[in-house]
Image (cartoon, rainbow, N blue to C red; front, side, top):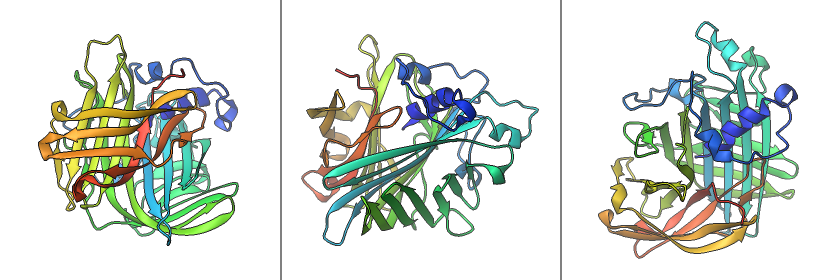
Length: 374
């Protein structure tokens, strides 16, 4: 759901000389960019079902796209860790139908985020690059089969001729991520056969997930390495206009439950002046990978506590009521300071899930965007 940073990094990063340095000043209105009409780009619409392996790759005729990995991990003593690896792509200009694909690649801006969370700390890093006309010269890019997504030496790539297994790796200063990822479960098409609606009047993205990844490897934090294992969730999403002008931001949950089920929820918040209700979506995914779409009107998000983080009042403790499936879950940040202090900052971090039965307990990730500085 990090499309805000993708669009802004692309539009403002393209101004930077050779696109090799990040933008220096955050614009006054982040979400106005996301709500701009996507003239000249292909629109995400119902009826197009993702095709594999080709849709693991990039879609330069759409304006924005990301490959997004989060992992809830533990060491041998049961201490909790979190990891995020994300590659964002945005087009600088609409595709020219007469240009060959290699020329289209040159008009793409890439931004990567890498973050680690440990029992008493959190850190985040970012990088930028531009696609090149010659793929073998590119500092950043994505290929569908065998799958590879990279920005310099930060990479997420298949270790076989297909899609899985994967390896995620990144190093920055004295911090490092190296995880092996695999699953025997199917991909999950989100929304309506892969089309994820984001507004009552339409609009949205193509969106699929692999929420059943088993992860194992090593994290290095401040120069000290620790072996970890756990569960990971990978999203791939692409669109040309993510928000509508009356929308302010979102709250997104990706939860691993002890029952083996996965729960994905989000709400897109309206501006206070809007007459629309917040747009809600939820899906419960069985351990076998079968999706059950929740009735939006029966999803009740309740904020139990907020905390001041980076000058913003952020909801970091929630109660979510899902009477349609007889669940009530409480979602709490493992610690408040999981702020992504990057050029276009947001809160993204690991959470715990508690409830009355095994289908209401677990771990996961929460993302919060669009909360103003107080």
